[in-house]
Length: 280
Ligand SMILES: NC(=O)c1ccc[n+]([C@@H]2O[C@H](COP(=O)([O-])OP(=O)(O)OC[C@H]3O[C@@H](n4cnc5c(N)ncnc54)[C@H](OP(=O)(O)O)[C@@H]3O)[C@@H](O)[C@H]2O)c1
Image (cartoon, rainbow, N blue to C red; front, side):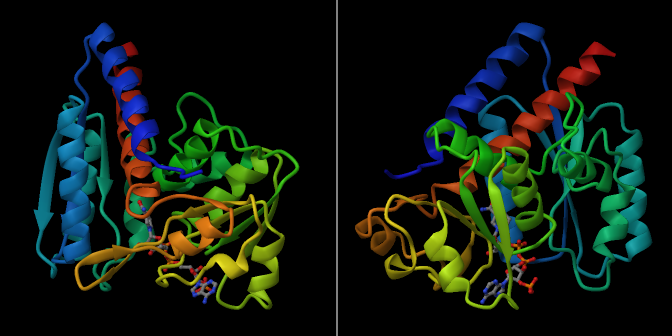
């Protein structure tokens, strides 16, 4: 089975648009982009385009690469207080001279639609996700993708490769919350191949082109490829899609798998923020 992200992403966003229409709300998302990283500019444009398609207004704030940290923190504070926006994100990665954690912690958790604030991440890890929690978009998208294709999770062995705070760790927590037996692997893991071979579900978020191929996976396993590298302008994932498919594993295409789900969940979080604000 091909675990395409396009159809579930469209369904999720159509449902959000219909609910917003009924409630007469028009969500507003602000996006802060610092610097000239070409990949970040592409991601922001994609987010903006999809947002507009589904009735979410976007306001993009572009700041130069050499923006001093206090200036970015000032904008974050301004967006926290701005009653005309429902949520905002600061596109990562930030230039090296800016402390990423400091910026994330400055975002009001109620407007943190990327779900990176320690309060939102903490709720995911404590498994106390309530209606006001924003789950980080990529991990949330991966779980919704597994749900959409009715992939059994409970009691299964899930291997997550990559331990970043934006993908690896939270997706591992979400799988654990769903009663998978989870192993987190990283650059220092010994015998990664054996871990992958034994896994029913593999989530890979490393950024190493086609590091996983068919000879490494179990027949019938589910392989979720979050990795994105650019080779000669083309997106390449962490998985060799054709070879794992030949092996009889179910795999996300890349592009067209985790990417559209990530954008859908960011926007779903924005719709939710607008709905909560509408109720206040
Ligand atoms: N599709 C999307 O919407 C989306 C969203 C976010 C990220 N991504 C992509 O996902 C990938 C990961 O992003 P990230 O922000 O999580 O990256 P990151 O912070 O760079 O983390 C990469 C992780 O991979 C591990 N790693 C590196 N080499 C490895 C190896 N040979 N074997 C096993 N593990 C290895 C690292 O281990 P250590 O911790 O030991 O260094 C680290 O934990 C990137 O390609 C990024 O572009 C895609």
